Image (tube, rainbow over all chains, first blue to last red; front, side, top):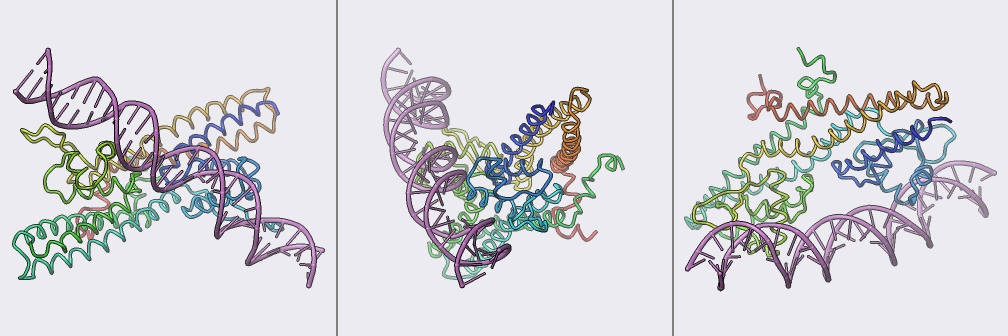
Length: 182
Length: 182
DNA sequence: AGTTTTGTACAGTTTTTACTGTACAAACAA
DNA sequence: TTGTTTGTACAGTAAAAACTGTACAAAACT
């Protein structure tokens, strides 16, 4: 197996690079190493194989493979005759990026929108209420302008996520470089 | 000051929503609260005011205001006669999103690209080397295909970041909803 | 039915991160 | 110059997160 060390060194380098950047996905470097290992493994892997390969507990493998699945970076695979759960990395990284983007932001957008809508309603009542002091009314009006601004911002963000999910983003940033030169 | 509690309750709700979502920016909820407080404060704030307002140590305020500045969510302000450093939230949230996106991803893209390029070079040498065993050559060729795929992916991601930085993204996802209906 | 295998819940431990208080350098004031 | 003020480096502490090992339920096998 002449050349095996070079091959392993290369794989190790890529895996480590992934591990050190996966925090962008909100994952730990261990999960990154796990992902990288699966990436180079040509067959779907079992939890026990991961334990073996990474020298970590099976419990850890289980929890981080779940985290990877939640972000749609990894998917389950089936293979007849194999009783253990099998996992493999999703082969479409573009789609994985989109899924990640969507999962991460949709929730945040929704939470913000709800909270902003509710707040705007309350401020409107406050401004309309004759009992409210003039000073408070002034502040409330200012705050309403601020909230309307960020409401619009999140509405834009929502449409941005749409553009990824519908793949319209590929019209603007095509998959292959050539296409961009119109 | 009739209605003050309602106003405060509203502000508190928005601040808390920001705090609970700012982990998407890789920041702690404390930094989120700090950001939210500055957002509603109509004047630029000093570190001491933040300490006062949030009941946390000045050291903490200093470190997290730096984190907020690094992500371009907050900027320094000047006011004649004031010796202390003043900070305020950037008023263009769209630009802040773009800056964040760019800062976060550019570094990762660059690290990956470097590591992939280096690895592809080494694998090519390995494949060309007559001393390399056939089995290793086979693996190396497979790995090269994988690396070429992710090289293209990161190249796409790089162009995606470009599209944000150049504001071309607003052609696809316009600022105001109406424009979208062509 | 019983037996074995497999994934994960949970408690405990280790490691990391967030936060505080002190101390001090740099900038400013007198 | 000397005395203040201001931000942050640094060391220590508190809190949170990552990881492990045990224990067990669910599923698969006999």
